[in-house]
Image (cartoon, rainbow, N blue to C red; front, top):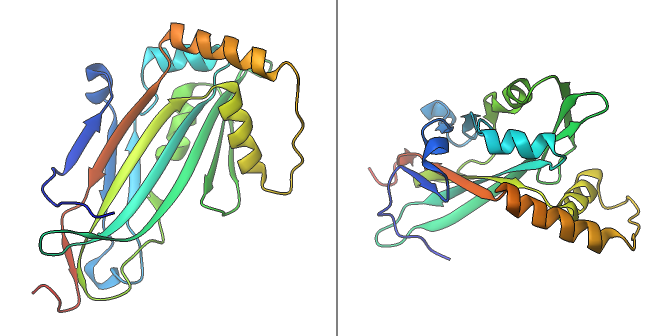
Length: 214
């Protein structure tokens, strides 16, 4: 699939206006001399800073923040994809301990457990920190990065699938005859409460590697 180049630096889709004014998504390029050795740094803030997300978390609905970073090679009329990496952050609330738990996993790499925190704000601060990615150009040309961030309230079936993925392929899965009923009820409740998906994105300016494009 190819992408035309005529879109803006920042786009925000399917997000309430109130949330748009607070959430921040940024991509910082490495030093020019390191373009072929290091990937960019991604930082975010206030992705969970809305009352509905807080309400859903406190009601037992976990939140997934899914990131996808793409590297594109800039051409004449069309641009070509030159790699991508994805990672997930899962935020859940433990009512017994009254703690918000945060875990992150990048592609097939090991799980990173940030631990539990007393508030949503403290939990988000852990994964808002600048995060260095290894995706970078491998040859000369003109490139840019495009980042998409999706914040989604998980249904039980979604949560089961994501937790299975976070545990790894060797973990056993067990079926439960009540899963369909619970999933239906939780899905209905999620819709009543207003749970859904918000999407944010950003792309960098075009940068040059080597002599190509000069």
